[in-house]
Length: 244
Ligand code: PXP
Image (cartoon, rainbow, N blue to C red; front, top):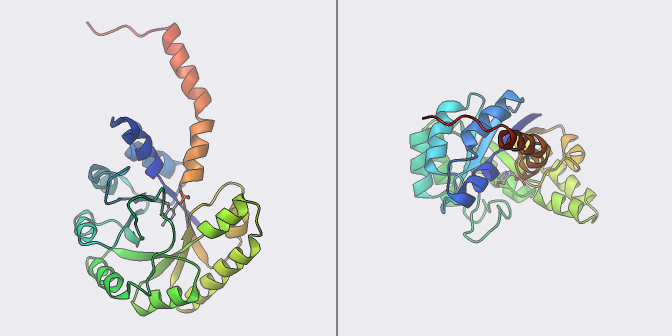
């Protein structure tokens, strides 16, 4: 099972001050050096975190696999055709949402999703569709010619976090993954996966890759804090000589 790290939150911290740090490009390099097999970013219509500049430089920097999540709009297709990421994951997008709220309704938006997937595939960009673990959605992805899907694990994660029964959700994910594999789709998964709930997902053999963001960046902010404070305190004790 491959790990792709979603580094949107690095850009969220930068955009909180509209400054130049932390740089998601630097974060991507660190993730790759640590063993991540892919880098994922979500280029949102409102550019609330990842910017066009980021995807341009990431395309030239990432040496593993660059996956850009985006809405199935004309603007995003044009950007993808120019940037040429290794993969585009089509996701639903609502302006006021805190994060992606659910899978794309491929049954409802079949015509547009099929058209966009075709445009991307024609540009030699791999396509994945983020869908809920629902057999009708999985079959529709296959019908419109998508080569891969990313199963939304968010509902399972919500159940786990609220200590509600999570086994039915894992069962749904496993069933959807099996059905997708049988249809010849490559199966990925993501959303809400944490250091605590990973074991349940990691045991599903059909899933080839996980996209994990929040939990990894949240942990990084804590495990890196000790060194960051020590470095600043050392500079205060021993200021560097300023250039004349
Ligand atoms: N997959 C998709 C399609 C997403 O939109 C996100 C969040 O941007 C993730 C995976 C990662 O979710 P999380 O940040 O909860 O790990």
